[in-house]
Length: 173
Image (tube, rainbow, N blue to C red; front, top):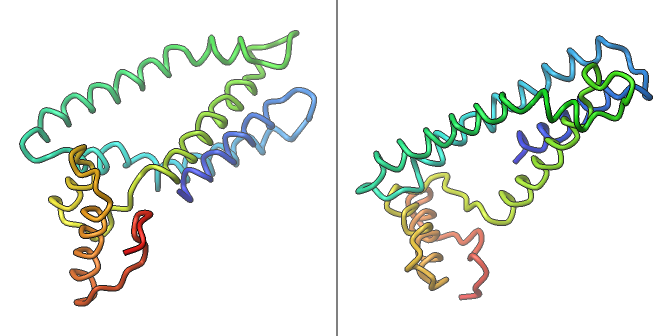
């Protein structure tokens, strides 16, 4: 989540550096872009590969990873193919919109903020869990919160040798 928060902040700052009315130093754009790339590279960049490898059951994992990889590359292409049009359409400069793509970066910051909220509330922590325990977290049949808590208890036993409840996924057992 820290990486995604950095992505949000630096995308918004990148938009600000391109804004014609703020008149910020041009060198700042380079530094903010580097900071964005560092935040993205250390956190969000590997997420499609690591999270997808964890969430699919073993019997469909290879095919599902093929599909998610294809979707990832199609999204990369769509982003690249539309960036210049989006940047020009959302520019706050009407005299030279191609030189001020600030609106596009503000849009991407808002989208990233939405994903931050989604990850914060919806993505379960999988650190220290075995693959079958992760599969239980994403199993639509496992709607019983006690089953999910049992997975968390199993994780705690494997980490510390005894059950230490850190959170219970909403139930009070």
